[in-house]
Structure formats: structure tokens, C-alpha cells
Amino acid sequence: MLVPTRHALTLIFIGVVLAGCATRPAPQPVPSQPTRIAGGLEGAVTGCGLTEGVQLNDAGTSLTIDTKGPGEAAGAPIAGVKCVLEALHVPGEIQSRMTLSTSSEENSASWEGRDLSWSYDPETWFHLAIADS
Image (cartoon, rainbow, N blue to C red; front, side):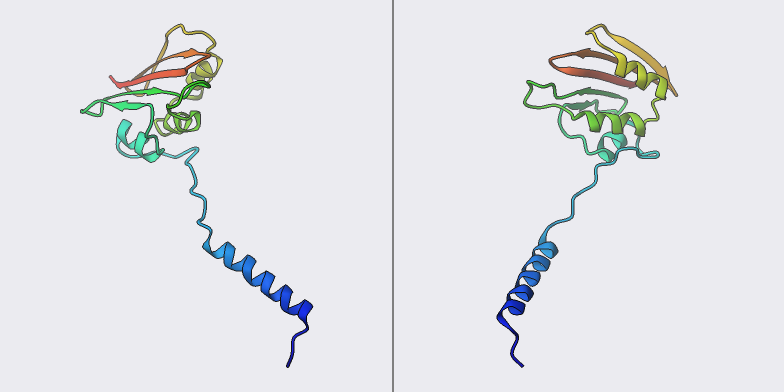
């Protein structure tokens, strides 16, 4: 049985499209609102995939995060910081205060045995320090 040229080209096109879909890697999701990530500060950083702009002390009791500002080459992405804050169950009221920060003045808050301090600068964005108290 002969297949007309038009149909043969259509079948080839569909085969190429399907083959291309099968070899494309699936996008990796970024956790946006994890429930509770085990392992304290280190677990939150690891679970949220933060690798740049993060410093954790050897004991795992103190964490600093510098975000990537508009003119900076490196730093933590804001989505990753939000993920860490959610993983550590930082209350919404504290997160709202952070969102409303518009100056480089140091701000602080405490919750569930942790202390948080942060400052904001339009050029470098956020600098955060979180410590177990």
C-alpha cells in the first residue's frame, strides 16, 4: 500500500515533533511554599536549593543571606529567600514588614526561638541574618 506524499510528510512531521518532546528534560520545580523542611536552617537552605549568597555557620545555628541586587553578579534569588522564610515558618506579619522595608535601616523580629534581622538597599536588595536563640 502506497501512502500519498502529503500524508507521508505529515507522519514524518508528527514523528519528529513527538521525538523532540520525548528527549526534552522536564523542568525542575522550585519549592515555593514547603510545609516543614527538616534540619533547621541548613535543611531550609538545602531544601530550597539556595547555593549563592548564603553563609551558614559550622554549628548550623546562624545563617546570612545576601540577595542578588539589580547590578550584582551573584546573590540569592528572592524566590529562594521566600522559600527559606516559608520553610522556617516566619510569620506572615514579619514577612509583610520585610516587604514594606524601604531603607537600609536595620530591622529585627523574633519567632519560635529564632531571631531575624534584615536591611534593604535599592542597589543590593536584602541582607538577612537568622539565628537560633
